[in-house]
Length: 388
Image (cartoon, rainbow, N blue to C red; front, top):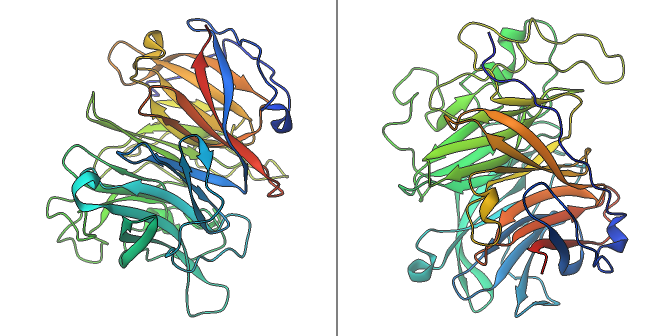
């Protein structure tokens, strides 16, 4: 029996097109805080990820293969040199996450995830490199993880560090068809990296306490499996919980609490149906030994960037999950239940502003949102600031 159920959206707010962001000055009203939308950087080509350095610089990845710097409020014109060759053939491939090491101030380590081209023509896989960010260049680059997976999309690519310095990476099922014997689907097979979350040490080695270490035929880096396309990943240091959002097919996007060794069910269970035809995919919506989502969206929002907000700018939102949506073009605020595991209400903070690819809480406590255009037209990174 499912423990958590989808709540009814509390509020929809229309804010116009992406092109109108810079002119947007009106105050937006929400249940607990009123806010305004301010453009941070414009003219970006499919911004995918955002991060901050101790000196205040903001880093932004563009999926087309560029790493950009925003310094003193200005987007620098040149991309950072030293980023490896990125596979960009296909709608979902490219440069994904940029993530500073927790001790960046001392070691200058940056981590980048991306689609790496393989020797086979047209093949690629999700890869992590680590290098040092010195004098605005990415140097001493080393490859620390290459996923044992290949396919047409669903690369994953989200990375986070936990409090102990472990590095987590999301990996999708690479669009392996959910047909035939569902229990034999690659996302149900822990001998590969299709549809998993992996957990690594900061040098790419495998922690000895990972759940499948020492199991014959298992990839030891796997932390959880049975995922379809995890596009949001966030470690909440306040509660020591790892949250993830993933795409269902046509319906059934999920919010999951990520716990070691567990099977999240794709494609055996779920709420989605086959694209176009709408025919059933799953055996059921729940199953023994398979984890139920803490929350789900039907219809899908194409879940993307994810945070748990804990900042000074919007104090009444503290502890709320803020989740982005691509197809839904929405930013949702989810209020957790008293036990901190499920969702009690959903409020839509942004709607029809554009496809939301990433959501971050900046060091200033503002909420930053990366917008993208499916045709790769230039878009912006904006932030939510309290209304004066």
